[in-house]
Image (cartoon, rainbow, N blue to C red; front, side, top):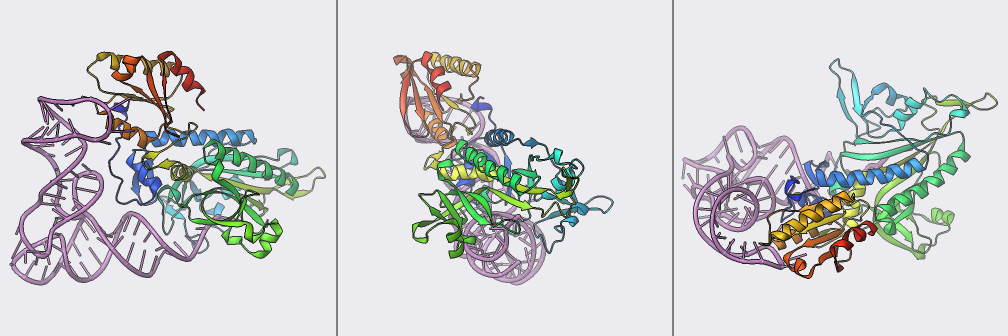
Length: 419
RNA sequence: CGGAGCGUAGUGUAACGGUAACAUGCAUGAUUCGGGUUCAUGUGACUCCGGGUUCAAAUCCCGGCGCUCCGACCA
């Protein structure tokens, strides 16, 4: 991708109507555009990051045995009345609207009802279970107050998986596996070292739900973390009884601010009962399906990565979700060989299947370097007259600022191996 | 939904009640060329919307709308 054709440009100053670091940097660098409070557009750079996050999550869900599908955003009232979640008194964040004929519909704020309702058609025997459908979709929540940029929006893109199991044992087994998948996801997007399994309130069917909390001062949650055991307790369930049941000691816990980047939940038969979602077991007895839910907000996750991995110069993307792997920066020179070399290298990298943002703009070095730091692509390769004279290219790593010089024929190999 | 603050060129800011300025961006030309070079010219705003006070409103008052932050809320 040529930067001269990127559409978006960086700004020297962040927007005045965003205080949060994540939205400030993402807007300044041209990854997203603010449509209104809590609603953002994904621009080319931002979309690339989102798609990479999506693919990592998809990969982990598929490894778990997940079945990707796409449930509708427009939801019918009747379905939600079954679980008693249509009423505005009970659910205050619905976006509702009407069809031309007056029929009330809602924009989905979660997916349990949709899945329970759909699966009722297809589940009738123990042979049909377990099953793990999931989707990526836009979710709408009419929040009283959106806040913190990408961290709490009114429209956001998420992954939701639901497990449908024969009994508690089968459910528990999957639930444990899902924890590992979640850990893998946060490792792979680059915040695993600061993301901890956290015990949170469980609702009717289990003592706890589990959250994955990424520690950062930008977080709106408070957790109590045991450094040694690498587990945490959300403030909402932080009391002596809970600590005792988890074998945690108060004086070994440290209070931290964190962002909930994922959560998993045992639902029991909370939804299968109202939807009459049953199956026949081997003895031809009717049994309710046992459900679980597993969510990750992708926009929030992207925002969290920015909060955690950034410095005073800008964002620092891990290779796994960076919009491009290489930022090829050509410096202005009267020597036409500089441009020719940059073009050649751009083509070679592209041919090797490496994603490159090529800064071919007619701009000065300072502006290009500043933009490069702001956008945060992992590897920066500079093509300049100075380098050409030495027959070398300067390679700078955004993560640690390390600089090395490589010959032209060493570049592809270096980039391909770069993790 | 309670409280506080704020709405002015694309972006960031300024302007005593006296008829919108600066920076940046963008365009053109020159200059410069490894960390946002310097200069010239030009471009660009019904000052969020509606009403009121006044000879005169970006500025004061009222009502909306919007944005941010604090709180409440948050499978």
